Image (cartoon, rainbow, N blue to C red; front, top):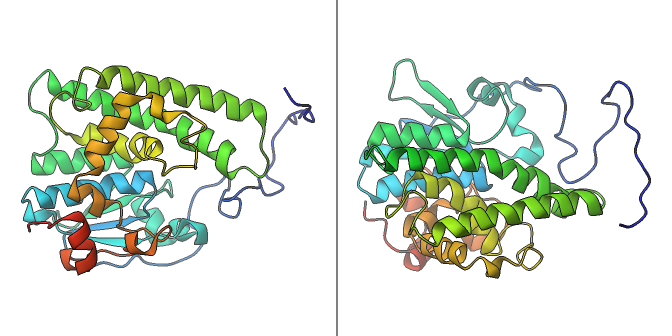
Length: 292
């Protein structure tokens, strides 16, 4: 291991300086709003406030899949939350999600409107509301939910652990990168072993378990997260690669990963989504017709 200055933790930790790294300006050890600003509300029952990070992509893919499946009442407005500018700390957003993390959803089809935060909770809420992408079979349903909650518990090691220290930390540190790379590769092996015997995570059917896992692990092996595909030798996980490409080919997935995207290739960005027509003709020709 390379020589590094040893850090001695203080007896009581205090927030007396920025932590450094890409998101230092918005990281803080306290909760609550920093400024007053109401959230916009569109014409549809579902109002989504998000950004096209993996957690945000889960929900926009879910909405697009529901619409693709013919659930017209799943129409939604998707509003961009710029986490780099601190939009997640507005009074309006904190009222929807006290944890100040995207995505956050308001369902105005209920009275009073229902708030739902945490991406896994949103997927489960929508699946139950529309009776879609959640198995009814007493064996398949718990399998689906197990992989959904596996993702919710595992992804912080991928994003906040490996992704932070490999891609965003102000300096490269060998120990945390090695520690989290080892864990991410273990997780990929867990998925690879399971997908060797299953088309999708819950078995033969595509479910919210896949919708939750693909934006993280699928996009990782497809080379879209942290520029780390070579470092992690993702091609060695052949079953995960097959699953990732299979889901990536779905038109609803391709639309979903565009919504609330404000970075990357301009042709893949749709800052806000209020109607299917917001996907321009060139994009529709590329990813297929929504059919609704």
